[in-house]
Length: 102
Length: 398
Image (cartoon, rainbow over all chains, first blue to last red; front, side):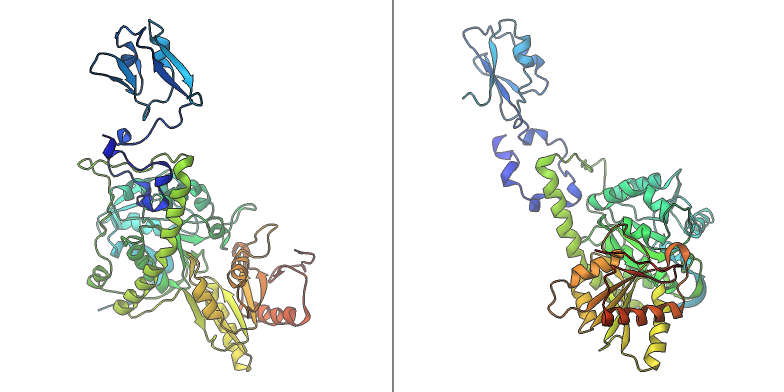
């Protein structure tokens, strides 16, 4: 997916605009960085997580990815920091931290 | 063989749309444009034209319906005037920004209030910055010719922009004049079938009219502006191709006996023909005068204007619109801006008249020329003067 991701931000100039701003490739939201206006990001504490998957189920943007070892991770390319995952987590394993706190 | 017939300008425009074999017409009748949709509706009903005529409840809907038609690649035509163009206003911007090559005749009409169905250029000036190619006709032949030309230029894959063909309400729209109509094969040779490269089609899904948040809107508008300015090359090429086929050559700025003239009068639209008679009379008395008419209003023909003005000492600009509280008539302000960077620019004098159907006779243009020269000789602090308006106007200062 990463190599297919489209130009965004400073790479994208007026010369990249299609005539009439048409979007020729339908359903291309997955190719665009839609997580760049997030102010908070979810951090999952593996000590508390019981792999129930509610965060993955509830995420409105399908931005929580299941990992091979059964745990979950937020895909920050898309995650908008809404905090629903943290809110539904029965183990309170997810903390929303401010983006500026690295 | 072409035929020479008596045709009113409105019907000439309708005939051009028929010969262009338009696919969709959506229009709402409004004086003085009424004869155009009326005639086209009749052609569709009588089977003379195989097109969809969409009757709508307003001009806003008329142009909105045209957007939809153009989006699927239909050759689309509409017509309006004055208040109708005002009611369309937000959709006017959408058509150009979405790059739909709709052709629209505007029978230029004054704006309310007081209510006026008669002609002036207030409606044109209110859509000046909307990104449509805008062209002016002086007679019925041009109403026919430039409507055909508008489809050719707007639909060109290098352009893809809507075109407004302006002609003066009543003074031209309702005047019957000789018009040379070409053969259908000649029209077909000039105007190929429209192939819109981004036509909506369920087999190849595409998004038109997407949202433009702050991180993309500026780039979208600059891309539109660059494309709009570049359309001038195709506009010129379109005039050349038209002339080669039909024998009538048009120019972005038309000059009439202007070569070497010390004083030039500048007009737009059908009043230019009256002004020509005033120029002839002045010339016959040995006066150094000439006329230039702006045919292309947008994109503005800067280079061609400077060439047409040449070394003239005085340029008298006649406006049929008031820019309330502004620097003079709207055309004169544009002319001043266009000439500002020139080292040897002429003195530009601004006159306003011909509002809301007020006629301008030959002697009115003679007055404008005489008074214009006097203003330059004696100097004046007025931003503009009026012609044919009762009561002297003073105190219009910058």
